[in-house]
Image 1 (cartoon, helix red, strand yellow):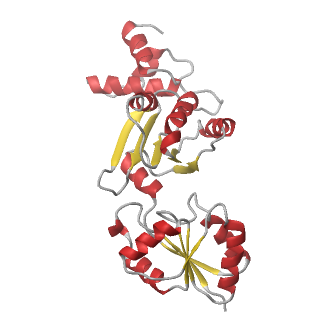
Image 2: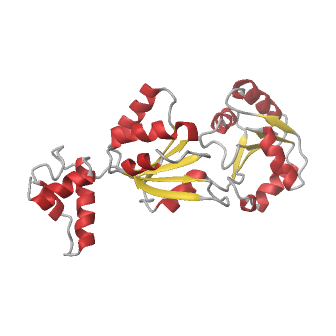
Image 3: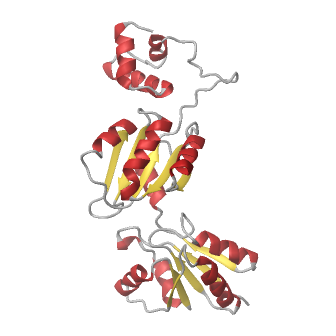
Length: 284
């Protein structure tokens, strides 16, 4: 009988987030396959766990995946862990799961932290429908093509990004999504200096002109407005700016007008100041 592959979610920051079940599995399996053995060893040492480790990462997943499958077929139980969080999410564990399925090997999940979900629920953006996009390509053309393909997606979009690429990614998002699209930028999640910042894309770019990005980021981006009618045109296509703004105003408060201008700017993918000027100046 073959062994079992356990996909073990580990803390993304706070070590207190590890589950009792995860500790039990890590302490009893025959082998732990880790994306970064040095980081995983630190985790194991913290909890007094001593089990054999082997590396399994993006650059050795083909040969090491075959090795792990052979061990599983021989009846060994193996835990797979990523750098942090849940395996198989932007992680080579996805390939290992597929290999197990092809070889009729049992796979089970030991659930726990996921950076993308933590960022989503902290964002304040709609969480009922969302799309996880992971890391964007380092290739500028491929990155641009991906952003173009999702620019009209009404679901909340979730991306991972490295600090040295953050500014370029925000700049590319501005080109494809527009200056007024809302974005929530989360870093150091569950750690002492957890930070969740809420901007428009234009505001985010301005902020990072004077702030050096540090740490791994989760970007939660507002979905595109669902404003296309059955004829393929935006529902507001025949409206003046004033009519468009007033369609959103629910009462006479200053905040209601401000919010209506913001929504109109998002619909039309133009800066808020342009809508503000047109609305208050009586222009179309």
